[in-house]
Image (cartoon, rainbow, N blue to C red; front, side, top):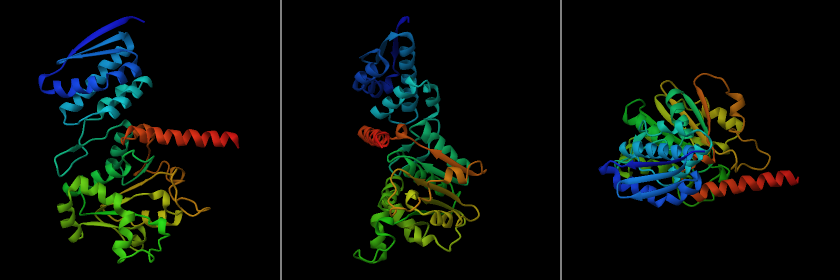
Length: 323
C-alpha cells in the first residue's frame, strides 16, 4: 500500500482544543490506525499507509465539526471512531453532531455520541413507543430524559412521567424507614440524577410541586390513562410481562413512551420472565413502535465500563461452552 503524509492546519479558534485532543490521544491513534501522529502548534501531521491516513483525516474532520457545533469530544469518542474506521463504518459518524438533543440548565449541549444512540434518538422522535435495550452506560435513560425535557420545553407535551419497578424490595417497601416517598426514592434515584443534570434542581422542584413532573414506582401507574405526557419506564427488564402490558396500555392521546432496560441484568425472582425479554418478537413490524438495541460500542461512561461488560460477556460465553 502506498505511503502517505497529510498536514492538517487547524482553525485558530479551535487550535488549542483539537491539537490537545490529538496530542493526548496520539498513542491511541497510532496504535489503532497504525499511523504516525505529529502535533505542532496549530498543525497536525498524519503519516503512514494511504487508507489508514485517510481514516485519520476523516476522524479529524468529524472531531473538527463536533467542536464547531459545541460538542466536546474526548478519548472515548476517538476510541469509538477508530472502531468505526476498522469496521468500515466511519462515514456514518458524520451525522453525530448534526442535531442537539437538548440543552442543560448550565448551557451544555447534549448530542447523540454514537451511531446507535443517534438511531435511538431518531426512533424516539418518530415513534409513539420506543424500546431502548442495551448495557449500562449506553445512554438509554439519559437520552430519554433529555428528549422528554426537550419535548416539555417545546410544549409538545404537558407533563413528564418517569417510573421504575422497585423490584429489589419486591414492591413491598414497608421494612424501609420513612414515609412512602422516602421508601421508594432510592429506587428512583437514577431518574432524579438524570433530570437534575439536564433541568437543574430548582426548575425540577418547581415543576415537581406543580405536578408537571412525576417520578413514581411502576405500581402507581395501574388504572391510569396518561394523556399529553412523555412517559419513561426505566429498568424495564425488572417488569413481568403482566406489568409491561399494564404500563404500555396506560398510553393516552398525545403521549409518547420510552421503555429502557438491560436484559442481561434482570433482578426478578428466579424463574420469573422479564417483560422486556420478548418485546422484539411481540412488537416486530408494528408501525409506531421502535425497538433499538444498543451495544457495548454505545457505552459512553468511563472506558473501563466497556471493558468490564466485554469481560463478563466473554466469561459467560466460556461458561456456556464448558457446559
